[in-house]
Image (tube, rainbow, N blue to C red; front, side, top):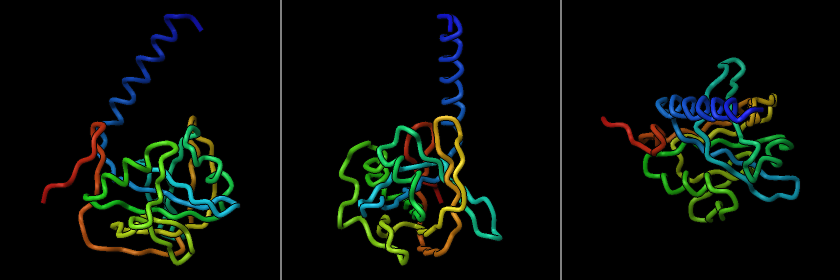
Length: 166
């Protein structure tokens, strides 16, 4: 690759990041356990519903995430949709290597998965499919349990956490 093509690629990448930062998204924490029972989790804004019948969702995990290996091998995972006052949790789960699972902020789901306590919504999922997508793994889950609470969501927009105005 020539120096000029590398510069064009970097500029395109920066422009793409800027464009995607303009798209407001809900903030979730995806969690699982590895074969040894150790909990793993990461913060994501790349989350959406895929299908109502059957109930499918997708979440994307970066290849560089510390828990990437656990998510490539797990049979189940949970997704916690964060409330507007859970920014600190989102930040902690976004950091690599941080002690993420504080006892006062985590819980166990009906499927015995680790999850964020008091989240706006919690979903337990069985892995339905995995797809490679560039520098991420696209994880599709079949929803097996849903827990919903009242409140307002935490939103990520323009590289910062935000809340919705009433």
